[in-house]
Image (cartoon, rainbow, N blue to C red; front, side, top):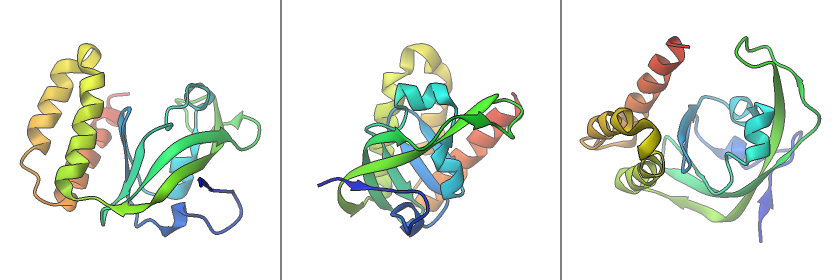
Amino acid sequence: MPVTYNVGVDSLLEDFSYPVLVAGNAYAVHSSPEGLKTVPPSLANAGIYNGVWIVDSNGKSRHVKETVRDGPKRRSWNPFRKYEIRIEFVFDGEAATLSVDEVKVLLFAGFARHAGVMGSILAALRARLEPAQTLSDLFRILTAEQDAWRRTL
């Protein structure tokens, strides 16, 4: 039976140790539940988090069955986004613990889906991630990559 996260109550998202990694269709590292739950309307409509895994820095993970909108779109504080929307997560199954190698498999499968668009960039990132022996190493590399990408915007 799916477990739904509802805004304003104790949630499964609060049980994670932050930062968390979203792995599946793409990857993103989020430092708080608020950052995870607030997305541009276009990504909410596209179901960007449907079918992904959320993995925390200790390896605790949950599979996201789907996301649903939680309220109307609103003006964003972020200068790169005109509007944003909050989403709720619907999880399927129980929490699991993933090893660093299992997390890499999830990441690399997501990379393979985007190989045609960003092949050389993702190949270089994969080469930096392959030697990672701990989740801390993985999070450090991914966070640095994400921060560098944001500085180019």
